[in-house]
Length: 108
Image (cartoon, rainbow, N blue to C red; front, side):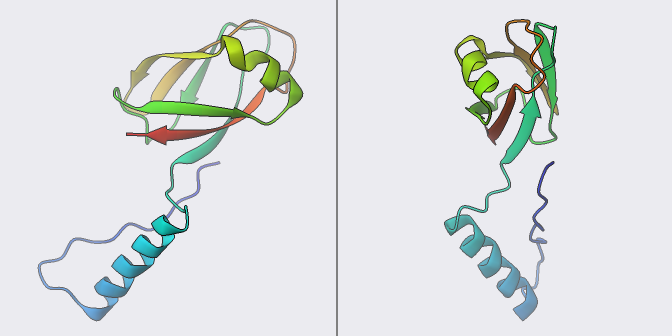
C-alpha cells in the first residue's frame, strides 16, 4: 500500500494557508515522511515479479529491505531490470515460498 501525502499547490500569490502547507511538507520531510516507500511480495514459482508504483521512472533507484526469513534468503539473488514509468521488473530465484516480502524505497 502506498501512503499518500498531500502535495503543495504552486500559486502565483502565496496565502497563509499555502505557507502553512509548505511548512508542514518541509517538517514532514525532516521527520522522514518522504512518500517514497512501499511493500512487495515476490511471486512464488516464478523468476520475475512486476513492481507497480507510480513513483518509479526509468532512472529510479529501488532499494529493498526483507521483512520475512524467506525474503532475507532471496535478497542476494534479487535484482531490478526494465524500469519504466510506473513499474519495474524484479528478477529472482523461483521458489514455492509465498512470503518473500520486502519493504522498498524509490529514489528518483
